[in-house]
Length: 306
Image (cartoon, rainbow, N blue to C red; front, side):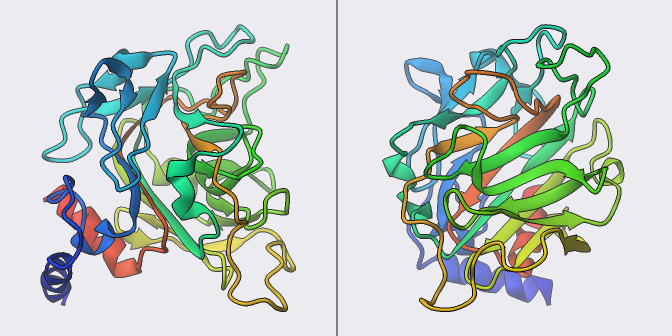
């Protein structure tokens, strides 16, 4: 059955726009691939920028570490390099952590696909390479740790560099760190969180590449998490209707604002402070403007693994 689905996906992909990513991205995803970063394509003339191989052409900033953040450690066969994210001086309050992203206070026009979006997805490879959660460099207590581990997110249209429209991250839920999909449909409104039930250290063992995915449906309120192509059991954290889905108008969509950017490996991509640093590596991050189907997540993982 999976072979049949893969053949069908390839046939559908023949009708999709040609992508430079063909061979590493499932053809059925190409049309909705807003941004794709494999960390093997620096922008000509500026090695601290990563070229977007998705349709939006949104260059990504490699913050504080620049070109040194690209390391020889591909997550899968055919990948040569990945992105190293880490703290530099955890004992000092500052903003020198290696992270990636971009931030524009007036919104990023090239990310307009997430303006009024009905759905979204974030996919990518993650490998824990150091202490996580990281020491809280904003605290005077040397034993204080951050309450979250930053992975990848799309900022809201009014974000201060932390608030997100769609996010894949690890955060505290009822006193325990959990892998979560978290999203905010309305700028300035409440967020909803879908938290994986399994222990995060089993989901993300040290020094092991893992393929993660999070999907978001702003109309139905449904979110999902996946690990290595398989769905994860979990539960919604916020009771009630935090996304304000009840009542007209329909369908429900995200705020009609351009996101202020991406955050990867921590918050505040404008580099004003350190927040929720991740001592980890990431590879082949994908941001889509629709919810990827379960069979597509599975086939995307298989396609990359070879």
